[in-house]
Length: 329
Image 1: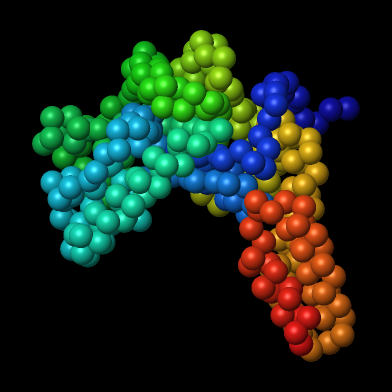
Image 2: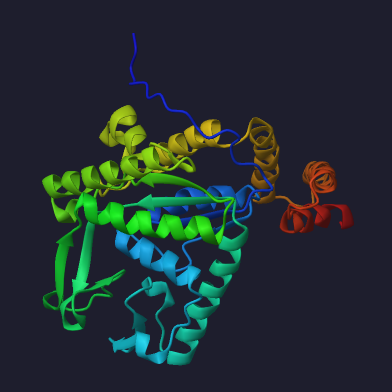
């Protein structure tokens, strides 16, 4: 008896390896993938503008990297004692205008340089809803920053609108970086504040637009994160208390499926070894002076040095510092 629906899909060949820089952009689910890859020592840059949900904001951010945009004072506005940008997440907001600009421009510069050398770009779209600032001629904003709602118009992007925006930026990306491969995902996070019916309409438009593009370009791929949660796990046991965000078990399952289909087999084996080292590096001893703990540290120090020697382009400095403390004790 089967208890889960099978989903069949094919990952790219060859898949992601450890020498491949991976650029990630989009919704909060992007960061589940990015944080895991980063923890396991992949070369990763994620969300240089902060979390982005709708395709227009994602495209505008990518264009800013392609055009080396430099943000100026006129790109900021002052509200609730902080300086903000309509193009950035609130993590860039701050009390001092120049510090805010410096942070945004440093992030953009790093994004441009990383995108030039990236082998993979992972785009996770969360919602078809885009908020337009009416006082700036229907300007699409990436974040409303709790600004009064009457200043915005909520716009549901059409499939054609989403396809056109993404199609344009993809052509520019492939000229900017001819070796780039793109993986699209649609976030399984449910935007219940929009309404259940409205959320489903929004996700459906994203899915149709993404598959239209994947069928058009050879270097575009689709990872079914949305379907794995909605159709395979398919139970509120796999959601957080808000009934909207997938919980730890769900995201772990999705990440394992990503690993099995989008990561090269040799890299998967290396990931398992690195995972052991990373977990050990987070270990907190209740009795650090015991012989057992010192042996534990020495054992993992040796394993980590062997990995560092075999893969000198990976950074194990944090773990080595912790493990070698036992050899000095």
